[in-house]
Image (cartoon, rainbow, N blue to C red):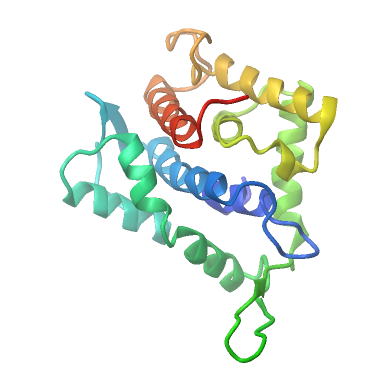
Length: 226
C-alpha cells in the first residue's frame, strides 16, 4: 500500500510527473476521484449501496481527513444516489487532494502567476517512489503477472470507468489492450456487468456493489463509451 488514498493514486496517475500538468479528461478525473473517496470508505467498511443509495454503515472515522469529511457529510444528509454523490463531491476535491499531496512532500506546487492575475500552477513530482509503487501494482495486474488485491482491483475498475488509458501514455493497440485488461479485472471482481457473480468475486460483495454502482454513474455522466 502506498500510504495515500485511492483518490490520490488516481490524481498522481492523471498528472505528468515532469510538467506537473493534468493529462486526459479533467472531468473524468474529477468524477473518478470523487468515486475513489467513496470506494475508500466502502473498503474500510463504512459505506454500502442499498436501495439505490449510498448509506453509512459505520460513522467511525478512518483517519483520512478527506474521506472522513465525506463520511460525516453522507451520514448527516438524506440518502442520495451514487450519481448524485459523485457530482456533489467532485467540485473542489482536486484542489484539496493536490494540497494534501503537496503537504506530504509527494508533489510540489509551482506557481507561475502571469501578469499578476493569471494564476497557473504546476505540480511536478518530488517523491517518485509513491507513484512507482502504484504503477508497479497496475503493471502486475495489467500483464496478468499477479492477481490484483482488493485495492488494486478497485483502482482498476474506477480507471476503466473514467477511460484513463490516454493518461497512462498509451495509444493505439497498447491503449486498447490496457482498456480490455482493466475491464477484465473489473468483471472478474464482480464490478462490471457481464462479469462473475458477487458470490464468485474475489473481493467482498459489499465493496463490489458500491464500485459497480459508481462505475455506472461515471459512465452515464461521461456518455456512451465509444
